Length: 235
Ligand code: FES
Image (tube, rainbow, N blue to C red; front, side, top):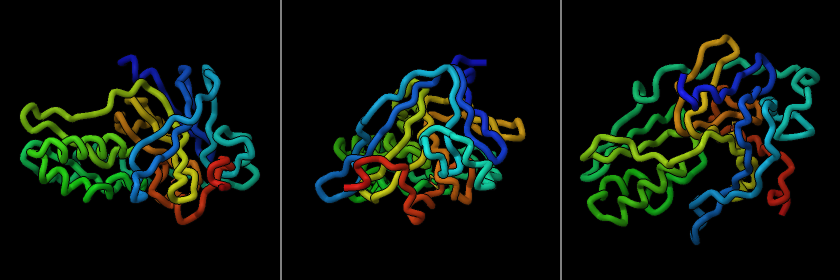
């Protein structure tokens, strides 16, 4: 077992995410570019370190992001419907001159970084231009669901941000909603049935309770107007 695999999130049947091994928890908020497209993540706060904690998965806790037992009161139905297929097994490929892009649409959380500056595909297709290449890498790195991965075509290696294992509570003020939990740095996610999902550098877990692709976020929180009470969403 690698060091990162000891970092662990266990999904409780119709209940919360149980987080172990003192995984840092922080809050990140989207900052937009001058046109209004998501551009970067800004760190808003760090939560106090805890060896173990439970994060709300049903969207009803009065103590978000933590669980307060509300899932029992509301009769939360949290069945996991996501595929455990490996990322690359259902990813489309787009080949540009310097970069290769893989795209697994099934993981999309509709955060919207990929629409900036002409879109990620356009920038990959022009990746022999240093600016387009750097934009494509930046856009893919900010794609919190891990839908997009760019690869250096020369080495064949993925270009990933260097994340320490951590979980980010996300806020999307550009859409007026709270977003999913961004799981970073290869933390193992264990299903309520004891099987595990592919450990990846980036993944997003639903915390509004409404995703149709649980445990992953599928963007339903946007239509649902999910709001965890973050101050910036009230402005
Ligand atoms: S948080 Fe995105 S669908 Fe629930």
